[in-house]
Length: 208
Image (cartoon, rainbow, N blue to C red):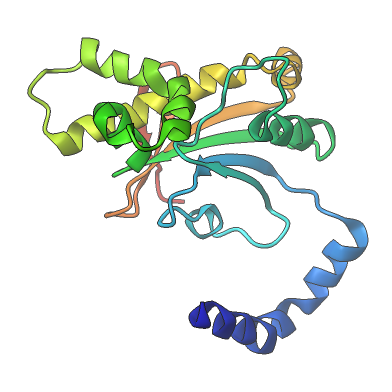
């Protein structure tokens, strides 16, 4: 915790003064983020760093497994964030970002790991389809690393489908006022791949 407190001091003394005008503008005028990013809570995945975004650029919702539960009448943090981002903030893009070496996806592949974590197990039911796809459509001899990676990628696609069940999303999609994006971040290489719905595959982001 001491390092975090030192970080606060460094921010206040060396970082904030160089951006104080921008922060004052945000405080005065409010936020107008360009996009909502739904990413994993993994400490190695930092949406603002990956996209090189600044304060006010991204509205971020993070949870274990970058999961979007299908819409229901029950309130939830993710559904509330989606609704607020669209109807209050007017974002025009939503990104679901998965990543390599995801602990949540490892839990899907090895459900015995979830025995002492019933809440995590219940949460991951929203990703079971991704695991089923890999079990049925991918080679049986995948390495552990490749299997977890495949499940994480399929999970991005599954969550994009879940997004479309939310009324606020469906309404904006119908009028072409919003675009959905699927990303996959490789922690070890720093590469980001984007999902191409027409080709049903992920492709690397091109420079520039």
